[in-house]
Image (tube, rainbow, N blue to C red; front, side, top):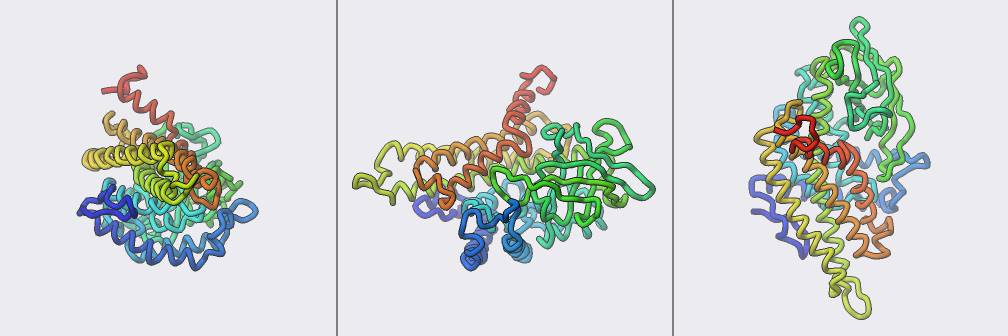
Length: 425
């Protein structure tokens, strides 16, 4: 086994030998490429809110810094490690990718500028639905994302459609060799800077969810318009409404077939869900280290505050829960790797249950860990310059996108046969 580096906590969170070389490469990239780059650009990144302009949008200079890290990671073959090798990715399984995400996020979130996170494909990068493109489509739409040269956004959520995607009202009607898309999307991450939008719309072909399709749209299309910036709790500067008006795309800009829209959208949502543990455990490790270091360094009444049980217990509880959450993630991701297709509508109840567990449980624990960290750090924990309150806001945000905590718990209850709608087996 190869261990990650966490100072006095070194050895607590081992990485399996098979994936350790990749994690080591990720760590080396962060420490030799990203951290010096952050120091060199401290004028833009040093203040907690200097990365936003007056409208709440990410400043162009900061966006370019993120883009530079993304491109460097792509050139190093580290950006799309979760994608199959036959499309240029790293070929890691979900379980293997967990350790990469953990490594990236254990450096924290920065002050919102996200340079470390920019090295790893997230919402803006290549995702499972695009594996359903044909070869010509892959070359045009997928390869630039895998290589980190371009970014994307996925337009699912609407004013009247959130957790229930069957309520999508955006339409796409067929006119000759074109589709014409009209509608509105809300809370779309990276809508401001995306090169490509993946848009879920209801077509005039098929019935019910069988009419849904996923379309590829160049964001320089005159029918694509970025609307109001969403000043969300994370203050990311990249989330906004999107409006489609007479947005015309070719028939070769459909992912799969008409009727595939819902399973393709669910494959993206399920992917986000199974990625949550790596993010949460990594951020939890960051919080644990901050609490641990502060408990040793900060003195009150002549002694380090870590000698007080009131400070010791939150650290002990967080360490214990991190181990439990990490073990749960390792075992569950390995099981899903062996049995589950993310886009399948007919998931076995056990697979559905596990994906919902992987979504809500680590998120709830991260929220608790962040709350404890603020309490242990005291006044400094409340300061934006301290970095911990940023994780607290991220943790609170995570419990809503890609399916709320309540939806996850209801899904788990349904698969146990508790809701009376035949979901158990």
